Length: 606
Image 1: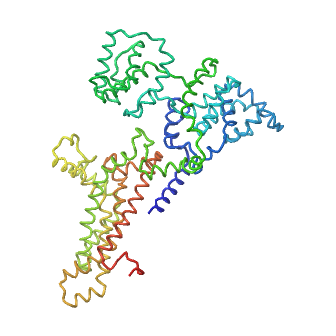
Image 2: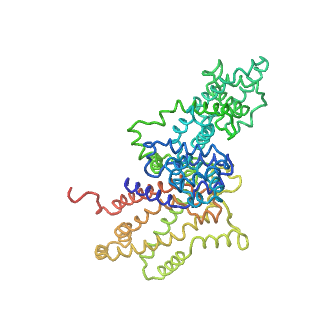
Image 3: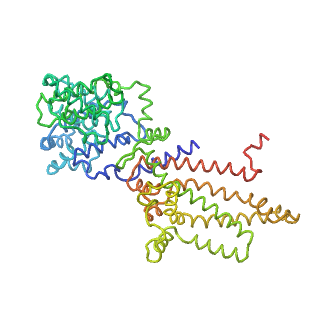
């Protein structure tokens, strides 16, 4: 089972990588047009580890100083300044001068896979086009894909005293592409105690720099703030926190700083209320201090502004420096594990499927469970109907072979087998739901409006009323198939010598059928059972769409494929593979129950 699961992950990963287009970029459209959209794109990309190499990560064994210096050079210039440099690049390329700074930048430019690069470099009329591509597309994307591996080189460039102002600005812009949201100013949603150190440390940096700008708070104002904070802390809702905040002045911020930095609850305050007060305080501070620590600068920024942002980045980098320079054994391990495939396998092995790539980006495990609670009961009832109806029909047809009941039931089964589920569903809707002929069943959903307020028995009745037609539609095709298999299997057993012997001995026909024949005819039926559990997991896209059953497994599977939701797709494939192998294993065990002659004991051991 383990090699099979490994094979499933490999094949699925390869197929997804071969799919054309960037799934995140496709959903966000022109992601480069908006900083907010681009940040959301980068957060999702790094959450899914799509910025990592596919199979081997050799970044930990390489020095990216030269490449990052070139990237910082181009990001620190305007498009016009880059355009002015390109004739020198074209001339150096033509002459092959090894001493030219432009030629030293050429390896990185060629690695960006810019279409028709040589033509763009050689043609002066296209230099503006190339400058735009370098400044706004190719170099930023290079920094995004390099990610954390380029941070030490960018920080090193910031720390160089002899570096040009434009290069330092470019290094800052590189860092903003490599790292998304380096500083954490507020708590996550929902707030977690482990967020405290990161949030407090950032605000301490800001407070140390700005505390001289604030005076003491008036005692009466402090009492009002205390009352408001206590009220919000006792009834905080992280999802609606900013809607609950009161009107404050900038002069009130020292009070909230004090409450955020409080390491122990005050007398009479519960630990929960104390923690919530820190959450509220951080939210207030971020609302009124919009940019506590600057992490970016414009191209026209002066040296003082560049120095301030450089210090902020160095403050962020210093306690994390060891993370960017792992020891030798860890580098060797990360060569294989810190990759797209490595992270995917780890998530699957730990059943931590991450978050869906589609809004609202809920955890995949929760998304799967919610979808299964919709489709699972429906598919389970479908399988029960199929086996409880089809197997007896198959037995009746086999016992009455060639008679009118056999011919009549077989004709009906062949008719049901030939009707596709979507045709049966449309006929049922037309005849039994729309009201042109009959209006016996509802058209959409699995519950009536307000069904959650019904008593349990009425709720179950309402569910069965809504599920009747989808259940019938799901069952007809498989019921016909299972009944025909049961009939064929019984007929094969009836032709065996031991059945003739039992009948010749005068054994009652009922014992012949149910004791000798039926049990031995179960082997093909059990084999089909291996497909039942995966079918329950997969749901039915057609039936769920036709009958308006939103949120089921089939509907979710289709959306995941259409939108290239990789985390959900991988979770579906992985869980489906586990269920398939579990079904096969269960079928093997049922073989022994049905036929004692089957054994798992090897011949050598006996």
